Length: 233
Image 1 (tube, one colour):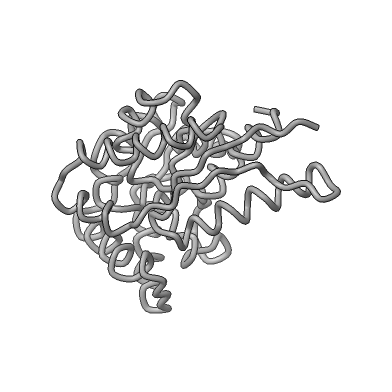
Image 2: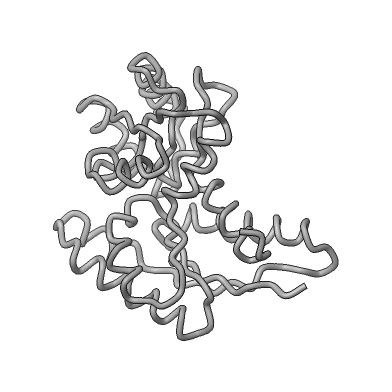
C-alpha cells in the first residue's frame, strides 16, 4: 500500500503536537498492519516566536512565518500540509496561498465530525481570537454549522487557562471545573455540542464529564490526516 506524505506545522504548542504525531501513526499502523507508520514531515516551531506575534497582533508576520514552513515542507516532499493548532488557522489563507499542495483545514474536519453526529450548532471554546474572529465561525458555516461564542467573561477565562496553563503543560482540577462551567453555559445558550477549539483543551476536558457532546478538534484533524495518508479522503 502506497502511503501519502503529510507535512505538519507543529510546536504551537508541542504538548498537542505530540498528540498529533502519536494519533496519526497509531491509526495508520492499525489500518495497514505490519511495521507501517505514517510518512510525516514535521516543522516544530518555537512557540515563543508565534506567541510574540499573536500578542503584538502581527498576523501578517505570523502568516509569513507559517507560510515559510509550509513551503519548506512541500519542498521536502509533503503532498499536503496541516497546521496543528486552531488559532493559527487565522492565517490559513496566507499559508494555503504559499503552497501548491492541499492545506487540510481544521474547520472542515471539525464540521465533518459535527455533521456525522447530528450537531448543527457548536459552542466554540479556544483562544480569544478563535472565539471572536470570523475565520473559525465562517469555516463552520460553510458546512451548515452555527458557531456560538461564549460570554466575554468566559472568553477571558478560557483564554487565560489556555495560555497561562495548558500551553505550558499545567493541568489543574480547579481549572477543569471552571471550564466545565463554560461548557454548561454554552449548552444553556443553545449549543448542541461544544468544539474544543484549542488543541490543548482535550488535555483537561473529557466527554464523560460534560452535559453536551464535545468535538475534540485535534482528534477530528487527526482523522482527516489519516484519511489523507491512507488515500481514503
